[in-house]
Length: 116
Image (cartoon, rainbow, N blue to C red; front, side, top):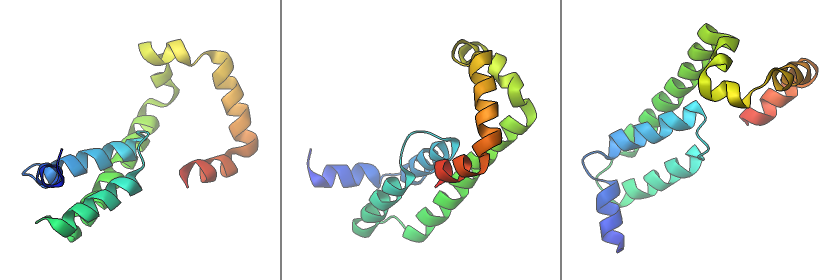
C-alpha cells in the first residue's frame, strides 16, 4: 500500500469521527495507547487538510467522555455489574474479596500507577 493511499484514507471524510471513536474507547480503557494515536493523527494532519487544533479538542472531549462513561456506569451499577453473564464467569467471589483487601491496603498507589 502506498503512502498516499494511507494518508487519503486517514484524512478522508470520516477522519474526525474515527479519531473521536478511537480516543473515546481509549478513555473507556481499551488496551490501546492513545498517545500514539494522537501522534499519528498529528503527523497525518501535517501532510493533509486535517486541523490539528480540532484533533486536539476532539481528543480531550473523547477521553473525558470515555472516563466519565466508565465512572457513571460504575457509580450507578457498582458491584451489581459483576453479576452480568460474561463478568460473573470471570469474577468469582474469591477474586473480588482479594481485590477489595488489596485495594484497601494499597489503593492509592495502585490507582496512581495504573492511571499514569
